Image 1 (cartoon, rainbow, N blue to C red):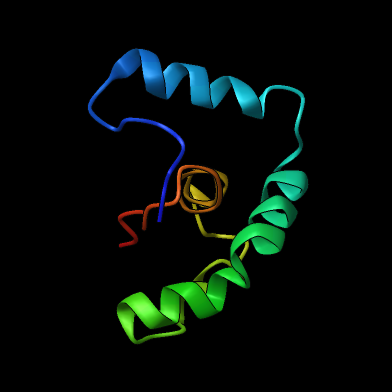
Image 2: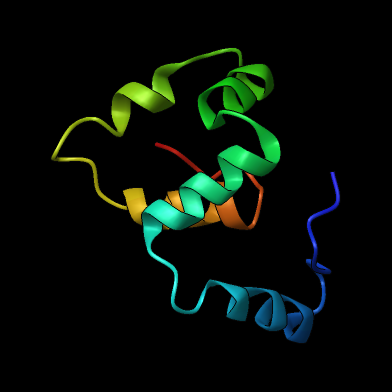
Length: 81
């Protein structure tokens, strides 16, 4: 999948990240779902588990919005532990 930025070039990452300005987390999520399909399905295909969806349902989960940005906007699996 084409990410839209060069992960080895800080300026490319910054230019791509600027596309997030003014967007809500929900808009980032919905754009990703529209472009690539359901996140839970994509992660299950990569990891073989659906535990991600359950871990984000708890109010004690920390870093959820950061993970959402990593996975839905930058298109890589966050380090979920």
